[in-house]
Structures are given as structure tokens and as C-alpha cells.
Image (cartoon, rainbow, N blue to C red; front, side, top):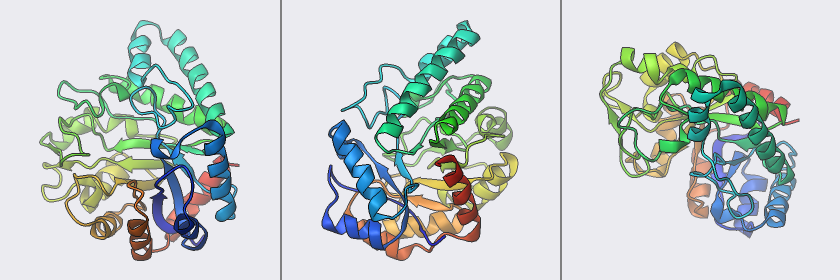
Length: 314
């Protein structure tokens, strides 16, 4: 499978001539959409159809962050009035009712995504709430109870897969322990591995998800020099080792301010550390081309795992 190890992004509601060229000739692994790309139901449906035609691939991954009220890229066409935290709180009161309501919610969400041609959703958020958790996670998290997070997270993955929607668990190995927004600066966590393993790592273990997204966090007691996305130690020892994640590892957005280098360096450092794909979200066409020329084609491992994902997308 000859695909470049990058997920690209676009600027507006319609594909420019250069964006068409990017998709048809440069072979990105996937495309992520944002609110700036969503105008109406018919518009986004036409857009995803055109993307798949240009890539000559009906299963080409068209990705979105559609979590709920706090993070909703489809707000212009679908309205969500609840967050993951609502279901986590309800779960404490009545597990049976919560699971039924949550499955119905996911049914509705997945049907809508399929109607508009989106086949990958970057849910669930498996970050565990702590006293100091930054609002960037906040209500996006199910709970401060890691067992509730894990249970509702696994329901999310399995239900989405039933609708042929692939999922991306995030932000591995855990963003709930951070008090800083990684979009703005680099969060540094001083908790030791034992403390993190008990709570933050737990929901990510034994997940049936085929993809995971990294947390741009520096865990100083594990690797004092490198943010997770650049840390072969965190990726190999924790994500692949202790957590045991066996799927495709995607960097969080390489244009976020937690990463201090230029985009090409951020991409190369991510892949060198052990990420399988890099994610670029800013939508600048010059940077898209610069990045796609600088990253390699996916390796055998990623190609094999991509084939597994395509089976979900059938």
C-alpha cells in the first residue's frame, strides 16, 4: 500500500486546484476535516464524495473530531447538547440506563457520519479527569474514575465499528494529568510511572481500537527531554509496552505550540520516535506540500494495520 505517512487538511468548504492535486497525486494516508470545512449537509457530502473520487479509494479515511458539545466540527449541520462527562456522571447513578442511552446516542451519531461520507471519528477521549485537569479536556472526559472511562470508551469503539466508522482513542498515554493546554504550550507532568499506570494509562489498555493519538505532554519522570510525540522511550516502553497498544499511532497536530520546532522537523521527529502517521491540521497548502514531500511512505506495519482498518470501513 503506497501511502504517505501523513494526514492532511484543507482550508475551506471546497477543494482548491492545488488541494485536488495534493489528494490525487501525492497519496496522503487520510484527510481531516474541521468546522472551517463544513457549511451544510449537502456541501460536506459533495466534498467527501469528491475526495474519495480524487484518491480513487472509496475507503479513503475522511476523519473528523466529533465528540459532543465541547468539540463538534459538524455544529453547522448537527447539534450536540451533551458531552462525554454527562454519560460518565449518569453512569454512577444507573449503569444500565446510561449504557442504553449512550448506545442510542452513538447510533444516531454514526448514522449521520455515514450519510455525509465521514468514516473515521477521533473518539473516544480516554483521558481521566484529575483535580488539576485543564479545561481543554474537561467535560470531554467521561469521568475521574478510570474504570468508567475504560468501559464507556470500549462501548464507543465497538459501536462505531458496527457502523463501519473507525475510531481513534486519545490522548495516549493520558492528558488528564495535565493542567496546561498543549495547543498553547508544553504541559509537563511530574507524576511517576507507577502513579500514571494506576490511573491515566489504565483506560488505554486492551482497547479494541485500531488507532490512537498521542498526547503532546512531557512526562519528566519517564523522559525528561522529550514530549511524548518525540519520545521513543514513552512510545516503546509505555504505549507499546506497558499499555500494549498494537495499532496505528498518530501524532496529535504537529502545528500545536507544545511542539517547538518547524513543521518538517516536528514531522520527522514524530516518525523517528515511533509514530506511524503525522497529523497536520492547519490547512495551509504550501505546508501540506512541504510536509508530504518530506515524510516517507508508510511502512509494512502501518500498511498491514491500514488494511485491518479498511475492513472496518467496508
